[in-house]
Length: 180
Image (cartoon, rainbow, N blue to C red; front, side, top):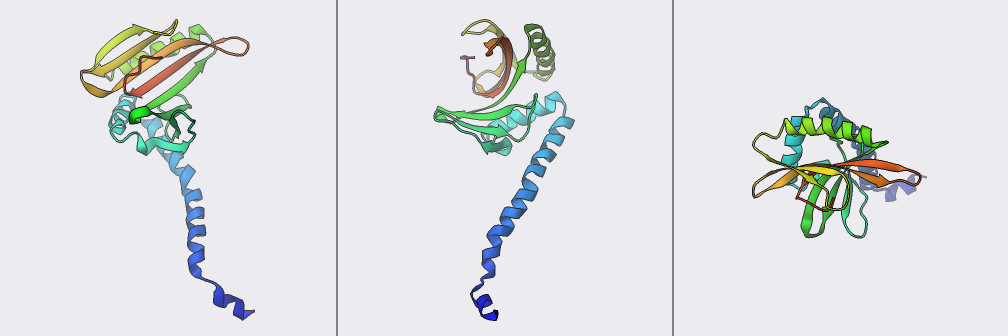
């Protein structure tokens, strides 16, 4: 029996210990980050995201859920709602995107107005453009600084569900994208 221990190398334990430790600290860290974000004001969240843009939002990238055409990560922190992601498209353009689905146009408009007012109050020195959507009904607001990225935007528009129409709200921090 003792002879079997002769071939045991304690270095084999290190990968297992790292796996166990990362499992213990990973989700808790995300919960801690989300708790910190929940305690922030809207302006603090926007400032942090604008700053994180320069590093491609690396600090908030969670689980990779990429598809063929773009890199997508779940966000570790949801600035709005509970469905935020980091999108990286061609030419390494990276955006932080939050999506909310409203059950009706009235609810969507209420959310948009409330969020618009919260964002707008934080954007001193930024230029605001209220624009129609290029691809159909709805509207969008873009806040920018001339010649500087990122830009902050909010969008609201109808989307077709399987049985009825829903309204979708998008919130972006990143390069300007007029497709939505």
